[in-house]
Length: 107
Image 1 (cartoon, rainbow, N blue to C red):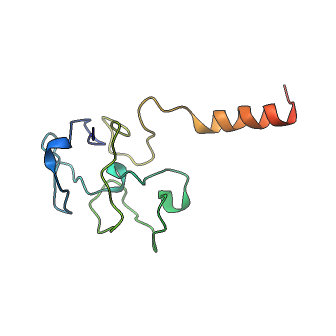
Image 2 (cartoon, one colour):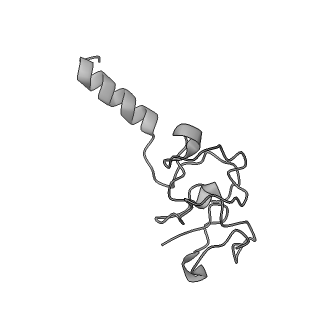
């Protein structure tokens, strides 16, 4: 199940996503980093793929050939700001700190 990053509406009925595809609910551009399965804040240029140049506007349509519609829910419903984590996702920095402390016996 795929959802719009901005409003959380289901995008499953869209079929193939083109650069000009818009969310049927809010009208935001769908072919954007924030809707991509490879988008990951903190990764090199916020992408898990080996892209050749950064995409500046993560919430705008782009020409990335790696784009694949993300599944599993909206990244940051109700907001068009980049950098949102998937809904219900654990805080990765806290998890990393806990693992580090466990590894070195820090209390």
